[in-house]
Amino acid sequence: MNDQVIQITEIKKFYRVGAEVVKALQGVSLSISKGEYVAIMGPSGSGKSTLMNLIGALDTPTDGRYVLNGTDVSRLSDDALAEIRNKEIGFVFQTFNLLPRYTALENAILPLIYAGVSKQQRLERGEVVMESVGLSDRMYHRPNEMSGGQRQRVAVARALINKPSIILADEPTGNLDSKTSVDIMRLFDDIHKQGNTIILVTHEEEIARHAHRIVRLRDGLIESDIVNEQVLAL
Ligand code: ADP
Ligand code: MG
Image (cartoon, rainbow, N blue to C red; front, side, top):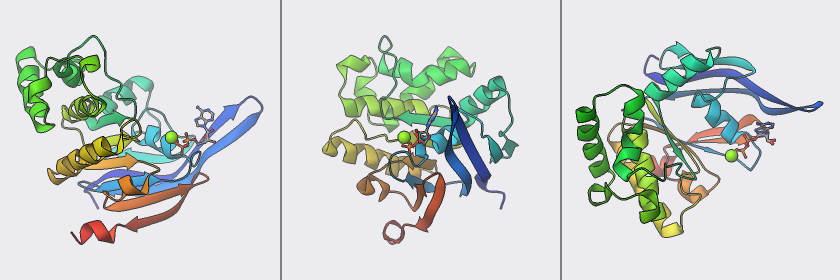
């Protein structure tokens, strides 16, 4: 199929720690099509973040092949990886990772500066995206003047700003209370409905239930990969 955004074939990732080798991923194959909403689950240490870092082109595999939107990224240089990453991927992290001295709007449009977009266009696009995450009235606030949920909305705006092929979120509700988590998951549901491809790492069943497909890792291998019938039935 040519609508596959992600094609991962027999990927392995080993870390050398002193004399020991940690086999974080031991041969994982996974294809994800445009518009899918996938949760990656598994116990602590099962390889979720390692897989996320590979999918997000933050790291390269020890072995195996990864094709992202038609480009083989398994053996790219760091510079080439950075370029693909900026173009293809929007990241959302557990800890928001906003720059404290910048306003919400400035944080959201930062990726456009790296992409060389003009100031006028950055601001126009920024205002549209800030509105889409429900933060029109917080554009000039700094991170420490916002709640955790609002900060994560800014991070989601930043992830969307480049119209990336995939949104990658690693435990996006991990630092939020349960009510705010529900709000943020509604936001993810909305951006999925608008046609975005979302990959979400979580260890919480409640959060994973929002996804249409649930991939479970154990000891660096895929244990199961199932369609979430409950969500599809809605
Ligand atoms: P998860 O996100 O599911 O908790 P990780 O992908 O972070 O799991 O880790 C998988 C395994 O790889 C663990 O045993 C972890 O200790 C190890 N690991 C992860 N990152 C590194 C690293 N940079 N160096 C060495 N070992 C690592
Ligand atoms: Mg992790």
